[in-house]
Length: 357
Image (cartoon, helix red, strand yellow):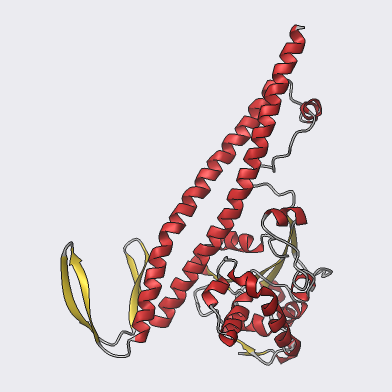
């Protein structure tokens, strides 16, 4: 283990963690940093990537100390917004004594030795960055800044909150020239398509994009609309699949928690076939088996199984929240395109009428 006292912390970081490549994301609230981290995790194959969220130990310790629901704090619900300001102030008191306290806590949750890459999707503090600079090999860390306009953040549900959006948790790295990559997503394309812009002047639009006729422009707009419709259907199907998985995940988690409560052997009645039930004696439960793929099952201790299912449930909730934002974006673009198509159609009719006269 490596002593990290030189980086303002008396905690230790496991050497097995320090040897792994590290990618960090920095950005404001609703900038999309979690979305990018999730996409990167999928790209690399999630079984080789472990996510260390600095927010997790903050919320876990805060929930434990204040007697509130940790799982709800970790979800994408409004529950965490109720406590956000109080939680930020509480975490700041700890950080004044030990800057990277929560970063180290999150890194030490990395227990999967098969994980080849560590993602930190919420690096926001200068002390956390200095800790990594002092303790992590330079060729094994990569820092990404996600930038986006306030207008787009507001579209995603962001509202300025005094004491949060002007606090160090949001602004500490504003002037830091320390990023390996700065990704400005303000004008970013979505699924290869640009943001739909309301067409105010049809003549200027046709000249700017060099359309020979209004009919050509109309055909292009309709093609863009159809692509957005296909993407919307794809996202809705993905959301439906995630929603259908949540009851099973919740039921599995409840079953494991029930097993944790049992300290000795107990009897159960289980379904052997339709309308056929048998009784069995379960010896003191210490291991459960989880399906991890088609015809593949692995055994885990209760704590390990609970952690995996909880992570999967949290990830499903996060992706549902992300997909909700994506669907809102798509609907907005489709509405803009519908208006543009209608106006361009009327413009075409007017041109034909003017030509006849």
